[in-house]
Length: 306
Image (cartoon, rainbow, N blue to C red):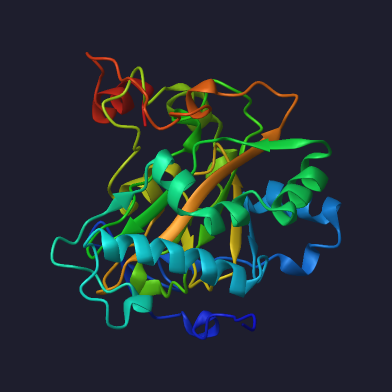
């Protein structure tokens, strides 16, 4: 299967998308993410770009056929579970009656999705992070693989609040397991948020497992933009694309306004010599006890002055 670039990358200006039901217009209130695959042969240039932009968008990083095999496994499981509308045209992942938003559990991924694991644990991505971080790397056992239904999106957040018990030099790799046009609710990032020192010193030091009612910073994209003084960015994605960003980079996703599931994963990589958040390792990394008497994000933000 040949590599592909989303057809509408060059024609985003004027396109209206939504996040949490709020409209964002390309060229006005949201920008197009910048691609960096032309820098893949220059690791130092990649580090500089990551420091400047807060993310790296790498088109055609993975073999498209490999991604398609993983996608087929996921869809077959969803069809068996009754999540899809019908077996006909199941490759399109048409949403069933219940319109579920699913995060697949660790044991399901381990037992049912070997082709998915062959992507996120591949030599390709380990070699990439080995060069980027200059050392031997590991990936957290906890792999976040999602199927996002119609009307669903991910609220704005920093990853550090969910996995802050280990190194701060932990990186997220967001991988689309299918072509994801703008109307299907792709990843959206908040430009410059990784340089916001007040955000780091307040929300960035909190813990979604022990302190906050929810780890999300906000469900309102306008609130995020106004509070942080920055703008959102997104893009259409194709199978094989990859986005990398650090723990202090605000992000979420646009609304899925289609009748098809958006399939994507978040996996994390770090140097093996650095401290590891053990809550996301082992046989049950997605079973994390949560304490009671936690405060709301709204209350916390008042205390933080955000």
